[in-house]
Amino acid sequence: MLVALLVLGVLGPGAPALQGQAPIRTSPPLIKYGKWIALGTSIAFGLLAQGEHADADRAYNALSDYCFDDQTRCDTGPNGHYLDPVSEGYYQSSLTHDRRAGHWLFGGEALFLSAAAGIIWELTRPSGPPGNIPFAPLVEQHQDRLEIGASVRF
Image (cartoon, rainbow, N blue to C red; front, side):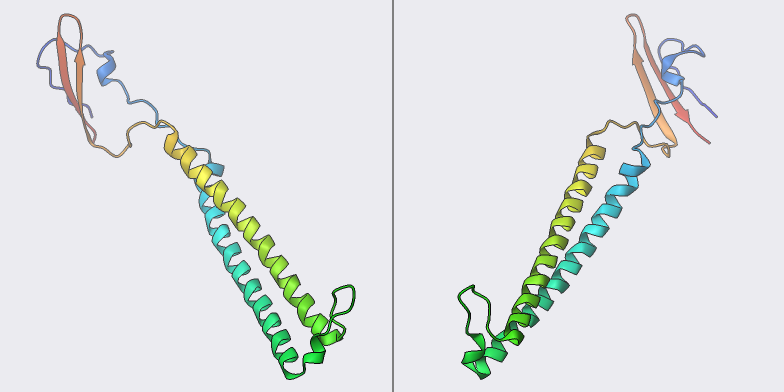
């Protein structure tokens, strides 16, 4: 229901001040919900990277402990590889886990940037007033009159 108060001048039924409000522009669902999915997935990828890094640390600490017991176990050949296959296994395991952690981090950072881009895109889009405001004052100034009104939604 529309209630209008007129102080100066007359508002006709087709007056722009009392017509419906401008439609609210909303973001596409891919942006609206995708940014939050990307942010959550980014956090999950960060946690997976942390787990892989912890595995790499465990493998490297196992190599250090293995070599601490007997220094000859950490001798390397001319190509830079460990001569002891157990030492080389620990080292390769550490490298593999570190590489995986890097991949998870790269994916997480890319998703975080896409989530940030979605948030910035939504913040920079013009939007109309929210649809849940029950009272909206209306003021229009014309050359010869001032029109003041109010609309109340029920």
